[in-house]
Image 1 (tube, one colour):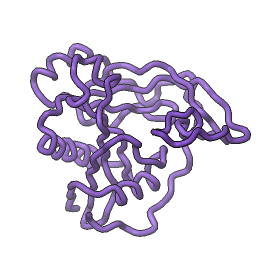
Image 2 (cartoon, helix red, strand yellow):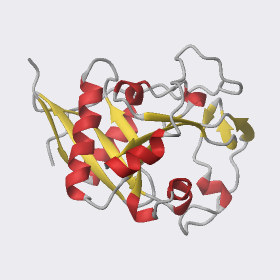
Image 3 (spheres, helix red, strand yellow):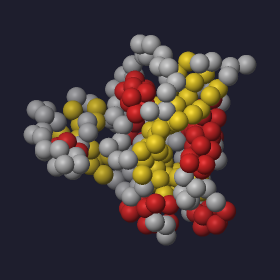
Image 4 (cartoon, one colour):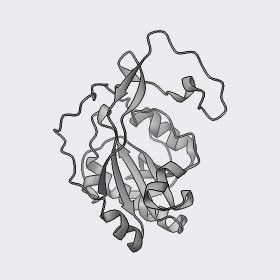
Length: 221
């Protein structure tokens, strides 16, 4: 039986995992904490939790310090039960490290072909979709819009690349994981049926970039 270890890891290991195995290719710019995963001492990816913001927490009557986002699940494979176990163990670590947290929010992007299967397997609460938004697309793939809108945490605004265009993309599927009984009672009222993997979503035609393969395993931090 393969041996799974989930523990805290440093930014360089998480950055490598995201570059290799997540469609965004980047770590969140906001403050975050990172859990690495190893199977039989082989580094297989990370789970990243980002600091909550007012817009993320306000719909649930909570403060920004009581809510965080599970912003990246970057693993070399999303097949099998290990993915659910990795996310579950990462949540357990988060509870211990951040006892004031009450809710974790995560999103699955239908424009990337995602409906949130890993959250459904983990019995997260599905709370519908976020509002539709504009995305910046170049050669059929989305690029980081912050660099071109002047909202890149103080970095200078860049000129749009030649050929880039703005498109409207569907809202993201929103999933909630309450961390205490009182929060669970509150957000359970928002539960909706899980979206199906075969559901057709208008505007979800942007194709993610081809995923890379790991060059070498990373050691535990």
